[in-house]
Image 1 (tube, rainbow, N blue to C red):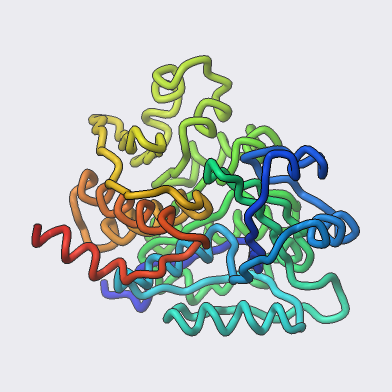
Image 2 (tube, helix red, strand yellow):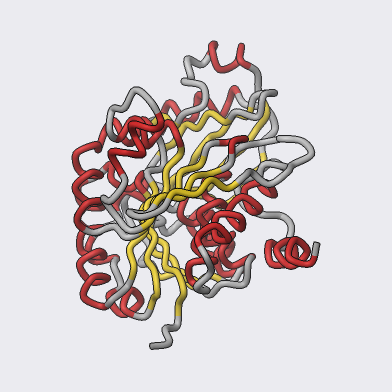
Length: 330
């Protein structure tokens, strides 16, 4: 059956502000390096005032993935929550501009559209400070059943588990997907996120998820494993496909029957790792949506990740479709 959308993302609708900084700045602001910390609006203002000149771009993990998916030539949709304000309108415009259909009802009279303040240190590590604002007001009423039924795959962002109403929305979305024969993909998002929601994630993966994305740290945190191999042994068989990224070591794709290691794509210089996992998922899911072999899906994921870490910002600046064609022609 032909469906209108190959991929539908559900996640935190966030506008990112990215600036270069030093380890000393992180220490002065008491920021956890390399992770994502939830902050309130007052803390957000303090960090913003201390940051250098920033680059403002629409972000949010699943939305970044959808932008990458569209860059490959995929047809996608997105569901998230923004406020009826300037940042919310910017977010909606940016998704539409890259070819993603955004289904949302803007929040009125509540918190502002979410923002993420990202400080990138010279080693290309990004430290994220997120004011969730309106995005966590995403609820069951924001889940468009018709869109999910008209999608091949839905993609859930782990970050959105930080509020019970959003968690309920995810459960509704997965129930609809299962009844419609729509595949369910989940990204764990962050090791700190895993620590907060370990039991929920394990239950969701076992019962509802078809495709799981994680990095090495996240998958080890999920099963409180001492080694990577132990983590793989724990997750294997919990769902159909598990794609685990390992930075310069590439990625490992695990199914109940197979395990393949796919090398990282070459990159001249790592500038900013923001969005690397998001773009890996974009390439991998594009391959899945087109029926490609899993090792080729992972290769597309590595290609997309290498493009995004070569510049500042979480979304591709070059056409991923063109890069993929060049790679096939080489």
